[in-house]
Image 1 (cartoon, rainbow, N blue to C red):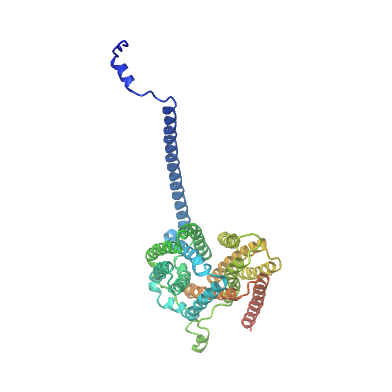
Image 2 (cartoon, one colour; image 1 turned 60 degrees about the vertical axis):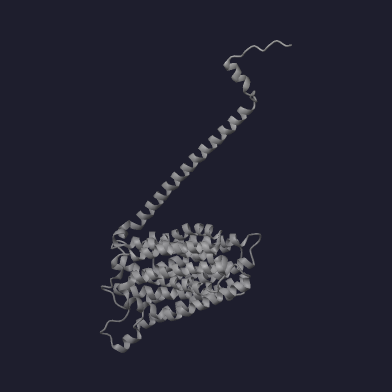
Length: 476
């Protein structure tokens, strides 16, 4: 028999009962746990740093935007509120445009999409042909409810855009009527806003600078909103439309909160001749504008027509006939980005330059558009297209600011409202007509751009002839 095992101490018994540890196990587990804890702490630290940085940037951007919108007395006069309202309006319009680009326009074959958009713009022209002669007098007669008129254009769009989201999700035929209503309400807002700005301009700020500042806020709003709308659209076009509806609801509230002076019509009257003029003569020229304003308005129709033409023509052309190995999205991004850059540059120049001859500027803008369209037709390519987009954006912006300056200079202050309402309506009609021509044009770049250059050249001759005739009548 073997010798008995000697008794063990309590400590030895405990060690004896425990299994012998794996020499590699605890070390590997400890390293994995330590790495996980380190990663978690680093992730948490990075997340907090990003959150703090985002919050600081948001606060800085908000304070900078607020200082810019309130500068030079805009905060005291109430112009800052209209600037903020316009930023939300542009943000909502950008979201709607992104949604429609993937549903109404480009989600179907090119031929069918062109027919849909042509029908859409054709229906759009009808209400504007009726509204154009009436909207100015309507605003003059019912100017006491202008805040509610602006708010109504926002509320209508909020409702219709939400209905469009349901129509897109359910593939309903109500998409077209709702989209038409949104476009008409958007144009009505543009006219109403132009008639509202003169009421809120502070004494130490010119009307041109006030319009430039408002337009710049719209560009910033659209630039910030477009990526957010794109992210929402990645989950479905209905989500970007719902996002736009929320923006329009906020804009409705901002419209109601506009200063009460927006509804005041003290010192204003319709654009007409004084009462001492014989009634027959006054009736003939009741809606007449000064010759310089008429000249600037006619010249503005050229750049605005080209903007509508290129928006529709290039969208379908680049989709059907892309250049080289470039995708349609990149090509459209280059053209649209160049146009946006030109528009922003024109607004910046309008805010900085103090001495600009509006009569010469509108003619230079028209000539530049005609020449650049011809150059792009002869040397069609990516670079000419980018230069054309830059020229169109810059020309349209400077021409519009020059028109505003001419109205401010030559039209009596008491009839600024009527003059701005009428001019903006005419320009909206020019854009729609240009868009319709761009849709029906054959998708051949040289042919389409060459015809556009010819139309602008003919319009230039017409503008010059009308101006000479007006000068001859004035001299006689």
